[in-house]
Image (cartoon, rainbow, N blue to C red; front, side, top):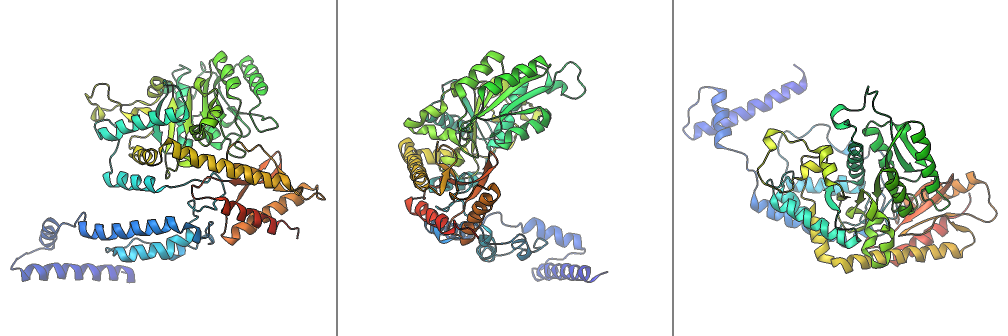
Length: 520
């Protein structure tokens, strides 16, 4: 027996003696360890909830959140730690005995917070910046407290029916036709996978029943995306068994939109060679540049060729809440499915992605699988478990309901409008300086640019300069930027999306860029 085993045995013996002496002091007599343990387990159950302790710590946590939201700018945006710094402060094994909430909250502050990159920071300008609004956080808290599973209507009628109503609100807010129905999924990547599974089912090739492997009666399926499409499209092709070689990347034009002529030519060539084009994935607000693919023209091709059109509006779709931005959805009325992410632009805490489709029957045909224990007699009630992969489903509609009611459509639009204004203002500073270069149109609130001194033409030197600028700014903790490559050129992306962002933060990051735009 090693040292650790002896310690465990000693602790167990001490616990047994404690239970035994407590029983004897009560006048109870036992003749075996089993009797002692059974008595203590049956008569001394562990409390599930201590209401007063929960109330005390709940108030403490809410107070902390309120202070955090008020003072988020006091934190470094990007976590100033190295890989492994957090793990080495955490025990390698779980605690055997209960630990106090005071200790846990103290460790949260001491260990966890230094390793947080603050997406709620007003100077978070990387990726697609977002916001967790106070109403959304409150809705999320109640969702967690209720802990319902909205897989069936009967497992929580309010969760199902609120989801139906709130998504009809969202449909109206962005201007989709009435024949679109929605379902909340976790992220756009999964929403896209679900949509393209429905597209595969729409081929009516009995793939659900017979699969893809070993079939001589089934041509290879082709999925078309652009060279600017989010990686979720290609990943969906991998998961669906299409094969990476059958996810065809269509080149983009000079403003990073899918080339319609190239798409049409690719489809024609594939059909001539015996492939089966089954889906096209177009984008409103591409990840790198927020470009808008020419939806009306793409939709016309898909309609003529009987191909499913899926639209990735995860970022750009929400902006149609602004009346002056309704045009970004032009052509989406002909789409078969579309994804919109409230957790990107609509003040909603992660995660909340909405999949809209005109073909609920096809979606259900692709996914519905009802074992005996899930059969109900609830008539025409909606069972969202039939609309995708998940059986367990959180009550995500609650936080979106809180947000729409708290801000109203006009309030949400006003915040989006301000983000657009700030992006255009920043772009004007770029355009006014001959040593800077704007690389892509500013369609929403993302600006793609680079520092390009007049006397430098070497792309390797320019890339090093712009990478160094990003690294230097991120190291200050004052702002967080990220970059991408467009046509082989490294560029900086400034993504404005946090509700707390003002012109102050935008001007400050511009100052930091200028200060660090120097050659070594």
